[in-house]
Image (tube, rainbow, N blue to C red):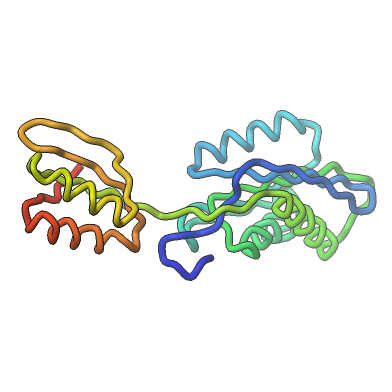
Length: 204
């Protein structure tokens, strides 16, 4: 994880990698995900594509680290699959990532140590094949102000690097802004300063 309090590493796109260990095939796939629904959809897709695989093991981490995580061994001995997959994700300090490893049994039992290495290696390889990117944690800020203040407000928005998510006009101008978490206090202070207090912070 980055030292900043509002950014973390994730993957840009899906990827696939395959390894073998004593005849067993390990097909690893990585998915960028943001919520449980996307995880369930990816799992369903993989289970259909590799419907005849012996095991489907996975791990994921969601949200600003440490966030939430889960790992499952998919029928393998406890701790031999999900945990090393999650460890591979954590070695990259990544989040909003799902890694699924499907195994086709090759006829030779691998034992606990070899299983852990095989699943960890498969996860490492697929993550190495992905493009990493930094994701910012943003906060919404709803504001209302007089039409005469629009130039000052736009100047502050540009200065802080915020984005306008929504705008509505009536007797006033109502905006919803998106700003990275670490700059939210600065945005509030500058809006108050540049409008001389002629701005209201509202709920969405």
